[in-house]
Length: 115
Image: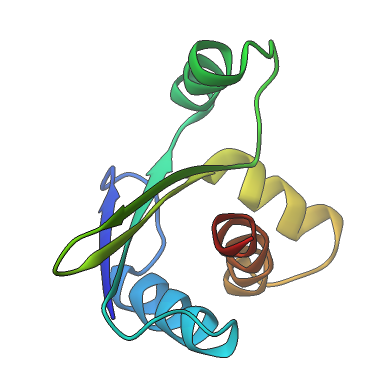
């Protein structure tokens, strides 16, 4: 499995943590061994823009899933977009660590891609 992470350096979340967590979730949810997944950590403005552009919804989402389902040599499952400020807000409101909030939302986003 391959997980590619893109994030703005101002968002303080560990890329190795995101890769390791996403890989574990893919395995737990039964993804194929040759699965590739993209993870993107963005701010509120970009999250809202993506939601408007691709879902015609006018709000800031915490997590978005974009399926690709491209079956070639490697299976490109899709991309999960996480809005860092809202993930951090969720962690604070629910008395979680930031990592726990990211893990919960990654389960949600990856689960949507595997349905």
